[in-house]
Length: 448
Image (cartoon, one colour):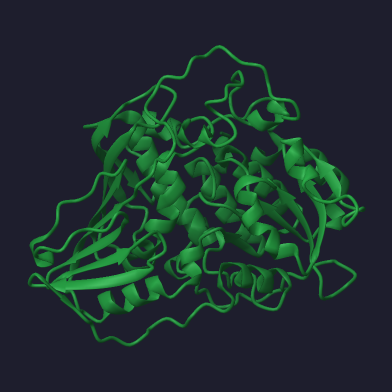
């Protein structure tokens, strides 16, 4: 990764920006260039798989270009119903031909393409919606956050829970002192639901018909095609995905970031690993962050568990059981468990008993949810920074989550400490893992 992708703390994001609640900074608001003031012109990069969930964003607008390395994914769009749709396997070519003819871009690719696909659009002045995790590396996350802030461009990371009520209830319960001072937050998931912690053979297999494997590899190191990698299980490979942590923490840990306001200053260590692998993420792991008391952050420890591992039940829960996935705030008076990946339900336990907390809402509901927030900002109806998971908030969150990915790579017993003043670790090996040099032909997005 180019060294000038690192940014200073002065150039990064303050606490207000990290919450998605910046006051409008003024200046010319983003306005799309389409001829019809009611319609945005979209390009979608990554159309199959998870990408199908985002087709609704352009249903009432216009899809100008569709990009996917799998020809079947772009051929799903009816040539009869969409005769003017331009189809590509490489978004670099799409941008060359259509940058002036699009207003907004949806990025729903594998993780290693998130950064270049999003950055090229931002450099062209476009609004960008990008799936989680925001980017593959810490440096990429920080760079996307910086560009969005400097150029005041609408952005949104795919994070359904941020547009829902659940974390807002968690915020009220914690900040109205119902469970007391929170010193620990535990988050766990049932992921991975794909194979991890195995050694995949290096030899290749025939590339399936219709798959542009060269472009699929993109900025990552070249590797021969194998069915164990594509189309879905790439998530478990370090060169392409982010493991269970990168896949789900931007959802399940979101309430922790919104409520506890952790800053970059922290230490990170892996407490347990099962099934280590040179190519893949492990089968199971437990990771710990210790966040410093700074600004709105009270100072606390955060724990992540994947592979169906779970924290120990605190005494305040009594005989009640932990859900299959969720986040637990352990306070001096009691425990709050927010169930599921999107805080679908919140339960408070005090002295071994479930209680019904009385609280008042402190943060207003989302207007339109994840998609509505983005569309309103992209159309200039709301300020550019109004989406709750704009890249400033999402970049900071994903970068901090990414510290756990680096700790996992280093292994058990190697605590690393990150300094916001220097924007780097106290460990040279960890700093090298904050980014990587892109493969030849993919450098343009990294030259900023």
